[in-house]
Amino acid sequence: MSLQELKEQAIALPGAEQLELMSAIALSIQDTSRSETWQFLESQPHPWRKQLYIKGRRLLASTVWGNMIANRLTLEQAVDNWDLPLAAIGEAIHYCEAHKELIVSEAEEERQYLQAEGVLLEPKSVA
Image (cartoon, rainbow, N blue to C red; front, side, top):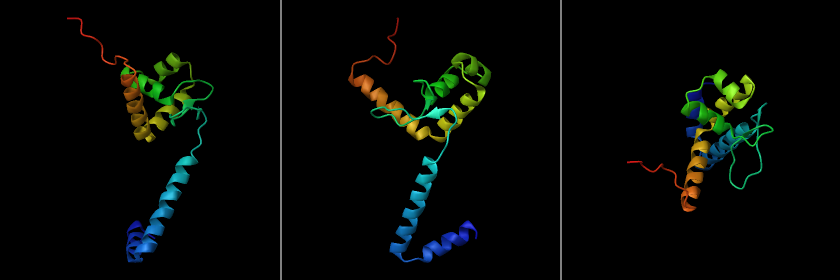
């Protein structure tokens, strides 16, 4: 069955059944994302962070990824910089690219917290 045929059949359903179908699809998608298995990443207890860390370290996958982007590091340079296997770097990149919304929202939450605590986030000009 093609996606178009499935869409046509779903549209033909009564409203309540359409809602039930959408709910079932949403739950299925959530279950799929929860079932991701990572060899080098793990969750760690934190009051509000949900993103994953490098296993055995208090190092966020997004820290590795962001550092690579900010410093224009190659995979090999990141391996040397973080003393991690190449596969762990690749997994961190894959995870971060697949979960950008979470990472961006947590970065914004941290930025707001730091500002509320009076932490200067922008460097002072030296003019």
